[in-house]
Length: 455
Image (cartoon, rainbow, N blue to C red; front, side, top):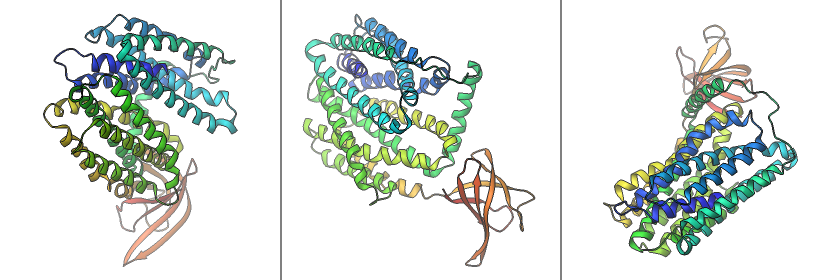
């Protein structure tokens, strides 16, 4: 909840109390940069330290230091550049804290209760953050931003006290390697994850799609704040209305997305959500009012859940377990940075294009992308196949090379087939981690092998 109050403080201080001559869009871009950039940069590195330090101590110390950063913000105004250092410190430590909390759950909860524990953590954290934002923004107008950050400064030490009540130190059992080598490994893993992602259409398509959705949501959020502040002359509480509507939409979407399972494929669920987003934005574009902006926020929150949950599932299914950490680290960065890029674009467009046209343009973008994912996930995946001796006749594969990484395989089945006069070879192989692949190519030299199926 303290994080929610902190976000409300940033919006109040940077966006609504910005100096004369600074646009609202520029203020939102600064707030996004503070909230997102450190989150994305620090994120991949946190595991190096979490795997070698007491996690209970991390949970306790980071919250106390965040509180100290909040206290340092109390005397600073929106026009002061000094507020950025404590704010960046708080956000960076927050990523450290959240990753530590998530990684601690399996050590504290029995395996049979892990799913419900993760659900409680995710839903509880999200609801508490939304509550902090909504209450904080409503408090900011009558009491001022300093009152909001003061609440955060009180909340975080209480979290530290709760962390200290954990009965075990949560120190990792396995000793980690040297810090420098582990940090270098993080860089290599990010490159490997990006290569694996780029070579897997059924993963890169969904991730690109949800990142585009985040880009549009970020753009519409900036646009909404501009409308409320500059056109309707409302205060920071209007941001709370946007967040509350979007949060209600996300909750409704999370509760209802299961209704589509079994009726539609995951790509079609996402495509339908894009179509609903498009229709809503296009319908509201000619009539931009406070009520219609809140309606758009609710619908985008609703359809976001209908996109995000199938997308995460598709990405998980498309990538073998041993690569998921690396792929999802890249996913996390692209997903988070989309809103920063959107805010940067808003700085350029908002002063020169009317709100209706911008909202209509986002509707067109949603509409154009609607059929993209179902088409994208059907694109073939190609692999290099290495044989024991050349790849002709009765020879069988010994390994496959995918995204620059070679995996040994065991051949389960071999078939030579002929379709429409074209002779093709087909193998069913099993990788070292148990994944089964159906690979096929024309029976000619230098033929390109594609993965037709993976289980």
